[in-house]
Length: 167
Image (cartoon, rainbow, N blue to C red; front, side):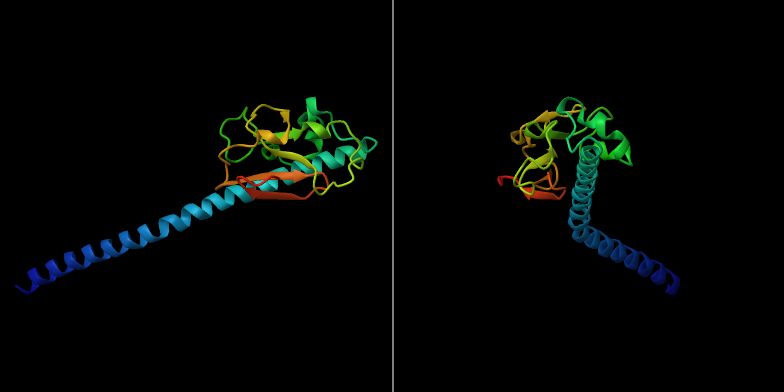
């Protein structure tokens, strides 16, 4: 009788343990999901920062002129250390890139703009092809990263901003 009681007690303890684990998992799931989304935003900001630095290095080597818009990715390839930086982490597919260069910046001297900290150079775009160029109006809607879009400015800084706000 004592052995049978112990066996039943073990099953009850096991059931309670499973219940506790299930409740903990249900509580932690949203936390893990938010962390995964935040890591995607950080990776995208890192990528777009590398691309912006590549453009500024290109300009430094080419009489302070930014790359032409028609081939901006091709021009900065040697300045970007990791080829993965050309791809937004939220865009799937090897031939999908997800970044575009501002049409107003192509082949211009990088110091021509009086407010480089406010001039968007690169941004996440709905255009997914290589060397995509467009106006800043082609931002993804809804944004790819937890309600936020990532942009790089002419002075080299990057920022993510909420949907509905202008870069």
